[in-house]
Image (cartoon, rainbow, N blue to C red):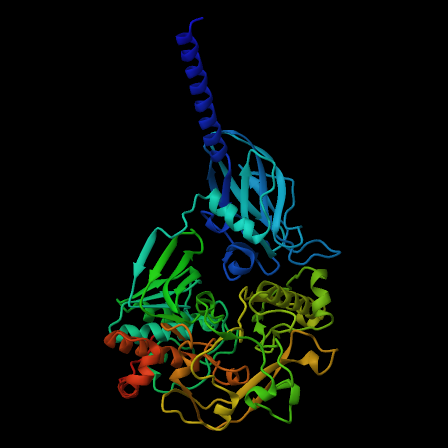
Amino acid sequence: MNTGMIKNQMKNINKFFAIAFFLMVQNSFAQDILVEAESFDNPGGWVVDPQFEQQMGSPYLLAHGIGKPVKNAITKVDFESDGEYHVWVRTKNWVPGEWDAPGRFKLKVNNQLLDKTLGLRSGWGWEYVDRISVSNKEIDLELVDLTGFDGRCDAIYFSTSDKEPPSSLTKLKAWRKKIKAEPNAPEITKSYDLVVVGGGLAGCAASIAAAEQGLKVALIHDRPFLGGNASEEIRVHTLGIYGNFERILKKIDTEHYPNGSVDAKLDQKKRDDNVKSYENIDLFLNHRAYDANAVNGVIHYVDARQTATGERIRFEAPRFVDSTGDGWIGYWAGAEFSYGRESVETYGEEWEEHGELWTPQQPDDAVMGSSVLWGSKEVENDQYFPKVPWAMPVAKDYARVAGEWQWEFSNPDYNQIDDAEEIRDHMLRAIYGSFSNAKKDTVNAKIKLEWVSSLVGKRESRRLVGDHIFTFNDAKEGREFPDGVVMETRDVDIHYQTVLEDEKNPDFISEALFYKTPQYYIPYRSLYSKNISNLFMAGRNFSCSHAGLGGPRVMRTTGQMGAAVGIAAALCAKYDVNPREIYTGYLEEYLALIEEQKFQKIPETKK
């Protein structure tokens, strides 16, 4: 064999292996398919829950049936090739213990129910299901809820490999990105005069006020309904006075319904319609911010992800408003913040009568807690409610058929941000267990569990630090400020868990200490960040102490904050300055704009 023939054969062999390697890589890539549960074509009775994305890695589907299995979630999955695939599901047993897991569910593939019961793993992680055969390059996939008690599914992974995907959040994030071939930056970028993150009353008011002053505004909110705690999903009525902003706030507030009332839906339509009526507000519902980029104390953009489709958008603006409640934008940008209770010596906020319940001798991580509201109704026929042994260690012998604001959980060992899912789940156990106890009494035979929120209604977490930290003494003494832009007459009230008074009390019931104050004022300097030069904050994450938050945390007051920063943002745009410079150089003009709000006609609100 001559040298030329050998060279040709070697070329053919190399070409063969190159093609084989290419096909192997291509085929291997095609055979790894990740299905995000929140992206199912039809979620059925399952609901998308994005509120713990920062803690567990992703939005997920929740089977929140309050004791009755929900309708199947259904989707189609396309494959590049037929064959045998291993199936993994990322899920969690939310109450591990010596009982059947409450959130059990199964998978159905091509109308065939797979044997494996899911939702049994303690903590978020992957459960192996089975190996399935795929033909025609697609399958019909369903999530089948077995209990109605909050089963949860994050993702389903199909692979020709039997290797379990990573569980640690850091590795899981990188793995997800690789599997989905997701670029580092969002492929869509939008620019605005002002970006508002958080669609509670503060964020809505900020958006309206800025839009009315001519700014182009993006309002980013991670739920399908605006209002935050006032929304039909949480159902807390709005308290506080209107201050200078009655016209704006009446577009978005609520009547004084009982907390948890179904009538919250009436004000939901009013609020959503009014915000959507502004042509220069671009509303991004079901979008959750996940990052804010700041360089040298200036935010350049905020990135957000659609909670179902995963589509990402980068929002650029000269100025931003953090109305997330948890202070996420400030946190990611490196803003100074506080958490927990200051010592009594820090600001001299003592109330001697109540001592440690009001302000501690030493600083700690105690904060006011989160509530999950719920309610029931009487119907014509007897109503069955299943046994819930997994709820009894929390509920014990407590028996109720409804819950108001006192249903609240806070514990220094649970961070209201990092442990928010555990806090919500603790409250669900309290609710289901207490209702189950109440159903043992024949007087409640016809009582039906009508509604339980799946969302935590928070009172306190991060508080971003501004040029002025509003304290209890500011309210107590009715201090007037040269830049006072928010006013309130409501008592300062601080919540505490009643178990602190008597260990026999349930740990999920709170009480409030009310301190009567004169009318008090919040300065503009408490509404922008001390060290992030283009960041406003409005809502319960404004600049205040723990005791200072007690009064102005209610929603008409936080709405005033929002309206005030919306107007300030417009003045910033007019002079191309940042928030602090409004105080130092344009305060008279700013206060005049706010004063004008009092004299604007208040239209009749429609529901």
